[in-house]
Amino acid sequence: MDASMKDLNPPAIDQRIMRLGDKLHQHADHVFRELGLEFHSRWSPVFRLLKEQGPCTLAELAETLGHNHPEILHITRPMSEAGLIEIHKDRLEGNTRMMKLTHKARTMVPLLTRVWERLDEVYVGLFRNAQCEITSVLDRVEGAMNHAGISKRVLSSIEDATTA
Image (cartoon, rainbow, N blue to C red; front, side, top):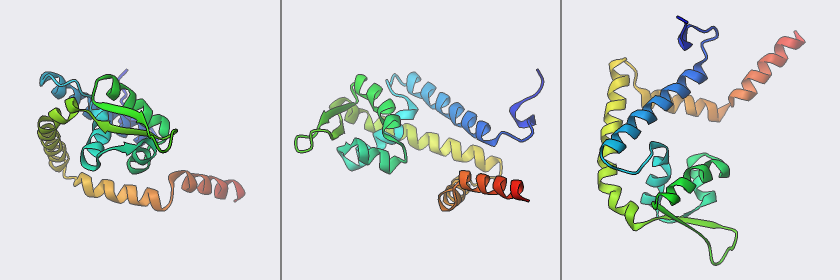
């Protein structure tokens, strides 16, 4: 089959962005493996937040990172199994799960920080070479999505077309 995702009509932008994200994760995971780190790039946002803010509840992680609770659990369970975070129920609020980095995780911070900085430099460089300031583009697109959701726009345009 000669066709690629970019040849599809409509262009399947959501799939291409997802595939690009997956490729970036694969490359980052390869770097972590080569450096002997038991770490997955999909854990980075949770790890960074816990590093910067200290212990957080599941709800705080979900809200800050823009994920729902099941998505955060999908990330934090394997992190806990790898010995990178401790998850325990809050003494004052029995249902609330508190999460914090372990000693093992804190020892990884200097190397992870260097890796993240270098990955960010390489990613930005790739887009810059393509004449795209990706961070400003992402900021504008995310802002537009937050202002007027995609589903609302699509449904509105479909409703307008069906009533015309």
